[in-house]
Amino acid sequence: MKSLLDFFSSLDPRNTVKRVYHLSDVVGGDEYIGVQQRLDCVPPDPDERLCHDFRGDGWRSGGVIRQRWGTMQQPQVVDHLLPLIADLHEEVRDRTRSVFSRFGTTGVVVNGAPRAGDDKDTNGRPFYLATLDEGRLRVVSPLDRLAPLGDRIETLEMLPNDKNRSNGVYPPRTQFRSGYVERLLHPGHGIRLEKRGLSEIPRHVASPGVRYVDRFGNTIIRLSREDADVVASLGDSFRLKIYGVEQEVFLVEDLNHTVPGKLNVYRNPDGDPLNLDIALGWQPNENDWHRIQNSPAWQFGFPKIGAPVSIER
Image 1: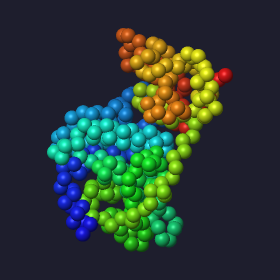
Image 2 (image 1 turned 60 degrees about the vertical axis):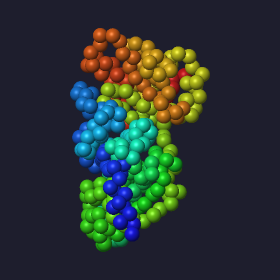
Image 3 (image 1 turned 90 degrees about the horizontal axis):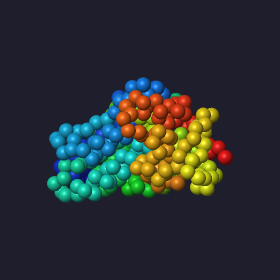
Image 4 (image 1 turned 135 degrees about the vertical axis):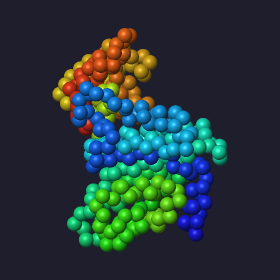
């Protein structure tokens, strides 16, 4: 009965999969994210691509938008991209609620589940299907990577993972399982899943340090609560240290109020008071190469994601 309902649900144009994003821990993907490579060449940025995918007109066509990014086994990257995808999905969905809308469904696969191990019964860590927005945002992922979505998740199901028995998605003892699980992004997938309680989703705990670096060298950091309190008491500028490199930064309201030619910090739009964005204040008649060479990532010596940060008092 459920499979029949899923089939008819899949015929609803609002349930057509229009965007698919693969965040891969074990494959490089189309673009590496972060500063593992120098910023000598700047391909399209993941944040920019996501904004274009949702806010542009590509999804109005009959095709499916697909992006694949390598996260380089950095959970902070997933922590950044998953909420961004959810925010953009909700933003555009609110403008396209008509039953005739072609906005459709957004799907995300997070490939962070290790291969089959030595356990005689299970085939590595299981994949879970989490749904948001009445099933129109669907995320297939290991359980721990769902934490950044927190209480936005409405339903949670687990794909059975017996090593010696097929689950209808991949054969028994399959090691490269992520290539199969995109099937679960389709509302009419017809696969029997195990319902799980939302309380199983771990609480999201973000550690202080560098959280994300985009392709332009802009950097998101997370402060300790002690350092965040110090920033609140400082003046217009202060000294910031990232992994041993110290620079002067200017505290501004947002990107519209930056100090030209200087490193500017402002509260991250996600509203978390411990997160700060660092960006270069652009000057007239600069070329892109000059902006990259003076970007936060460049000036702080290309810090790796997770690198420690501190406020110099």
